[in-house]
Amino acid sequence: MSTRLPTLAVVGATGAVGTVMLDILSTRENVWGEIRLVASPRSAGKLLTVRGEEVAVQALAPEVFDGVDVAMFDVPDEVSKEWAPVAAARGAVVVDNSGAFRMDDDVPLVVPEVNAEQVRNRPRGIISNPNCTTLSMIVAVGALHRAYGLTELVVSSYQAASGAGQQGIDTLYDQIAKVAADRTLGTRAGDVRAAVGELGPFPAPLALNVVPWAGSLKDDGWSSEELKVRNESRKILGLPDLRVSATCVRVPVVTTHSLAVHATFSTEVDADEARRLLASSPGVVVQDDPANAEFPTPADVVGTDPTWVGRIRRSLDDPRSLDLFLCGDNLRKGAALNTAQIAELLAAEFTAG
Ligand SMILES: NC(=O)c1ccc[n+]([C@@H]2O[C@H](COP(=O)([O-])OP(=O)(O)OC[C@H]3O[C@@H](n4cnc5c(N)ncnc54)[C@H](OP(=O)(O)O)[C@@H]3O)[C@@H](O)[C@H]2O)c1
Image (cartoon, rainbow, N blue to C red; front, side, top):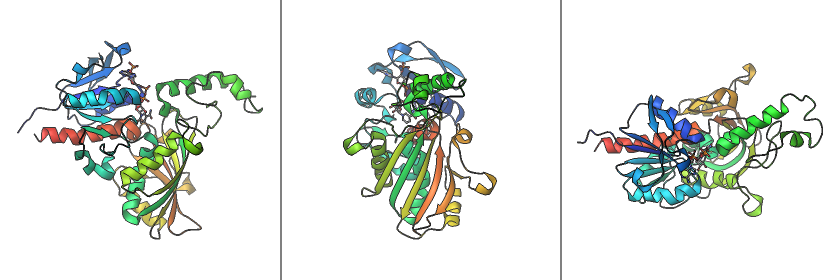
């Protein structure tokens, strides 16, 4: 039996997700031998800290995957599309955070609390990590589905700026700095838009505003983000005909996505029972005491690992439906943490020899 610890490559180590990944790799139980950090040639030679050690970033090239057992990809879709197969051809198992392969039939889409067994079903040597909006609700929704049998989801998201990467974070802080001093702003149509100037990756001002848009325009007015919530929820839960309607909205929060979810099941539900069931589910925390202002908010949840659930109510008009409010850190469980959990399942395979 081999006792060699597996070698890991983190591709995109300098980005918003990559930065959180280095923190997660430094704080979770260490299951890795060598950790290689990789980014674009722009970052080559830059020193980043992981597990308390400074490691020099390498430019993405085929040779960086030589001897690598697991390669995490936290890079834009087009970079994953080109380079994940290169890493796989050199013998690495790829865990990809981008949207490049998520809906491919021969690539599993894995959330360890929901469908860990799919990790072994990887004919191309590639495993996909779901998008951050789906991930911020699916652990809790999956637990409810196992108990009650899900038939429909109606979702409204309240998505953080960091879902649009480091550029999204920078844009929100820049806009807040521009509007902070002027207490007349937000009183006349267009005054905030004129004050913030640069919109960055968002189609409207984000400071002092909400923006009913995330992603790119798809058929019939749907956004790519809304279709991801539908398609990825169906694939992860193994429910190809699940009815899903999502409206994705960007809010002026740095990190942590929130979702209001109306979930309908095949049997009648009870709010207290659902609360108990969620509270005993791995990766879920229930915070639900509105009389004492106890419910999850992004400002309180950011930086934590679980999916937080509150405002659990049975629908007044349908005894088979629950209404919930959920928060999840989009850079942790919504991206880096889920990838790290998948990679740890792989590390256990390698360590078992
Ligand atoms: N932000 C979220 O909430 C979130 C959640 C789930 C999934 N994701 C996905 O995770 C991926 C990374 O997102 P992010 O928000 O971390 O983006 P980001 O902050 O823009 O970081 C992008 C990373 O990719 C690297 N990169 C870009 N072009 C490259 C190239 N040609 N060759 C090698 N490396 C290259 C960058 O390296 P340099 O620094 O050298 O340019 C950087 O490390 C995306 O696919 C995104 O859709 C994001």
